[in-house]
Each structure stands twice: as C-alpha cells, then as structure tokens.
Image (cartoon, rainbow, N blue to C red; front, side, top):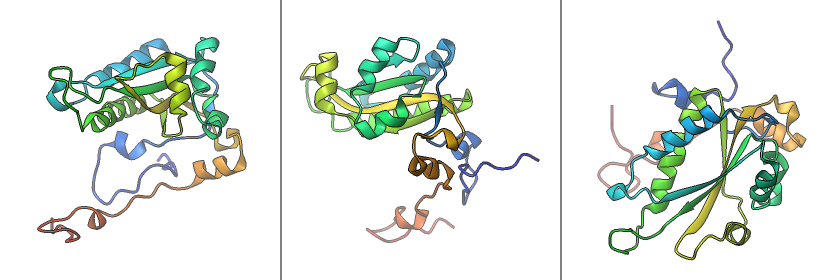
Length: 204
C-alpha cells in the first residue's frame, strides 16, 4: 500500500482524489512543462463557469524554455516569490476585465470567475502530474508596465506550474518546512451557516 503524502488532505467527508491530493509546493524541479500538458491546463481554464459566460480573464504565459519571456514575467513577482518561482516550468500572470463586454456595466464577480478558471487549471494540472502554486504577491504596477496592460483591465495574481521537487530543493529552510507541514482547513461548522449568521448548519 502506497504511503499517503503528508500534503494530501485528511478530509472529514469523501472528495475527489484530485482535490484531496492538490497542494502548492515551494520546491519546483527546474524542468520544462510539456506543451501538450500546458495546453490541457489552459483548456480546462477556458471551460470554467462565468457570469453571463463573460469569461473575464486573460492569461499572460511565459514558459521556462523561453528564458527572455520567463524572466520578464518573473520580474513582475514580488522578490519573495521570485526566490522559488524561478524554478517552475511555466509562469502565468492573470488579468481581469472588471466590466461586462455586453453593456459596459461593472462585473462585480470577475475575480470570482477568474478563481473558477484558476481552480479548473489547478485540478487539470494535478491530473497530469503537475503542481500549481498561485500567488497574490505580484507587483501590479510593474506587471501593467511590462505588458502594456490597458486601464480597462486589471492584473490580479500569478500562477506557477511545474513538477514538484523534494522539499530539500526549496530555496530556504523556511520554505522547505512549509512543504513538510500537513495542510489544514477550517471545519465546516465555522463557515457553513443555516438560518442566520454564525448559526452552524445542521446537515446531519
């Protein structure tokens, strides 16, 4: 019997194995991600649900094998993220359009829909033996200038995709320790309510 990885979720109720096994490493092997796998991940993001099918996301992609573009996108990350993300196979800068194309009105769920696309990408990557680490640590001004992102759009996050390495390959002991720690989540009782605020839902 295969030993369970320390990062695999200890769930209270059954979930799909891809969800239980998904985690975000800091230690990436400096390997190229195969183009077919990257395209499958992006295709999964493409088919995410979105309000009015707006699909408000744009992804700027940089592959490890194109060192010039990879370094450009890496330079948009905060320094702490550059430290480990430099070893990933692919970097992605995510961007949203905060208004609906059909009427120009604000799309208040654009970031929510981007999250759905990123979630699809993450699970597709997991199914292909890849790992995804999503980052809020982006220098938004640098990103906008680097890619001439118009004022009609907003850079939001970055995504690293690649093959995980052993935690010893992390660029610091602090990050290696994070890769060794079990994942934890709040219990359902803390955030699933019924009948009123802070009333835990009785779903038994």
